[in-house]
Every structure is written in C-alpha cells, then in structure tokens.
Length: 202
Image: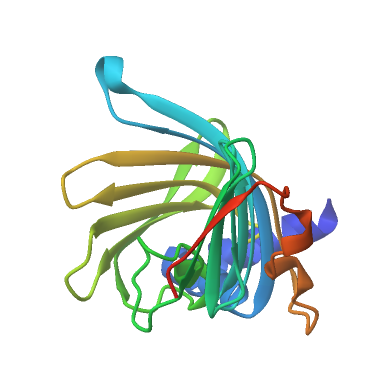
C-alpha cells in the first residue's frame, strides 16, 4: 500500500502528460498482458465480447470470441478451432494499429500525437486520460486511454474512420520484463485438428 501511495504521489507531481509518457515507455519495453471486455456499435446493433492479450515488441497473442491470433512479428495466424479453419499471412511492413494492435503498445504510441491529457476521477478512481490521434492517414481516428497511478491501463476507447467507437475495460494489466523466449507467440501447428483447413496467404 505504501508503494501504491508513493507511485500515486509521484504521478501527481509529474503531471498527466508525464504519466502518459511513462506508461507508453513502460509498455514499449515490457511484456504486457491483460484481459478485456468490449462493446461496440449503438442501439440494437451493439456487439460485446471479451478476451486476453499478451504483447511484446511486434509479437502478440490474442484470444477472444472464439478466435486466436498468434503473431511472432513476421507471420500472423488467425485460428478458429471450432470451425476448423486457420489463416496465415505475412505481417506487412508499415502496418498500422488497426491491422496489428500490438504496435500501439509495443511502439510506445509511435505514430500518434498526444492531443490532450488530464487527471480525472472515474468510478471513484484517480486516473489520467490521454487523447491520441494518428499522425498519418489511418483507419483509426482517435484512441483514448485511462491510465492508473500504477501505470496500468484501466480503460480505452478506439474510434475508427466511420465513427464507430469500441470501448474496452481492461483487467489484470501486467507489464513484466521482456523475454527472449517468444514461444508463446509461435503457433503450435500440431495443436490444430487433423481436419483444419489452412489458408496460406504468404
């Protein structure tokens, strides 16, 4: 508890913009993992879901809504085990955040400009809000992050070009040391069922 209080005090002294910079730097140099729930759309067209993510550098593992996306930074597998289908494709150089969600955290928000930061109290919690916009033309129009005093991500909102907003609630956020062991980001093809249809787009 004393450590949390100390970190919170440092955040207050540093200011919201410094907190955002510290968070992005931490995410870029760490192996980050978290669970999430999301909602997108409006009215009767609202979609919801949940999943988990592990990110390190340009590699990531994302599981949610019946899909697994496994990327080692060079190849990306999208697997639907229930349907017996898998797609493998090359990771394109210059991919934006919409194509590779790992990039936003692993590159420390590179390619985005921090337009606004402010301290807020939300649901009884002290948070820093950061509004980021892409520097170049992108399918992503805006990203809003809610960062805790402990430099973890609590919530996020992503707005794409057509105005659709996806809201994420994050739990179990952890930023640990990066590791040379990237086996978690490599698909074990032996784990696929014998009847799995693999579409190779490489």
